[in-house]
Amino acid sequence: MEYNFFATISRMKYINRWALMRNSREENLSEHSLEVAMIAHVLCVISNKRYGHELNADRAALIGLYHDSSEIITGDMPTPVKYYNPDIQDAYKQIETIAEYKLLEKLPKDLRPEYEEIFKGSGTQDDKYMRRLVKAADKLSAYIKCIEEEKAGNTEFSTAKKTIERALEKLSRELPEVKDFMEEFLPAYGRTLDELT
Image (cartoon, rainbow, N blue to C red):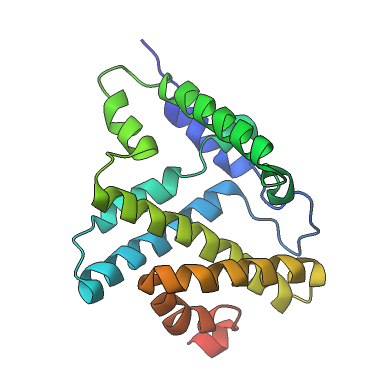
């Protein structure tokens, strides 16, 4: 029997983000997912080392890699549309859930439970907290995109940057790991290679 889960997942590189905005450099879903995975991993490491949690940072990275995979089927829904009102938001969540199950059906039955847990979670407190950090990593990645676009002279992202900045400020009051990342790692984004080396 042939299964096409991974061939389908590999198509993330064809899904461009920020479709409604002029980009100085397009970002695809694969690039975004890699960045989210790396940030989610370090947020969990910070949480474990500094705040006494016992989160599985490797698992968080894996969740980050797959966090937007439903967009292979749905496409990247622009944020102003997705969050326009609660009805649209709920409808889109249902569409995402259906898309995730469509992806899971592309796996052999014996492998599905492992991937279903990546997509849906285990429901434990640690898992819920870890998934909040993955969502925060997603928001940080979006903010980094805004920084990069601004640095390239593109003012198209200025409003998005302000909106995301407010959301991150709120998150950093709830999740100290986010505050730490913003203070310790975020300032280096947007610097030139010479400035980083």
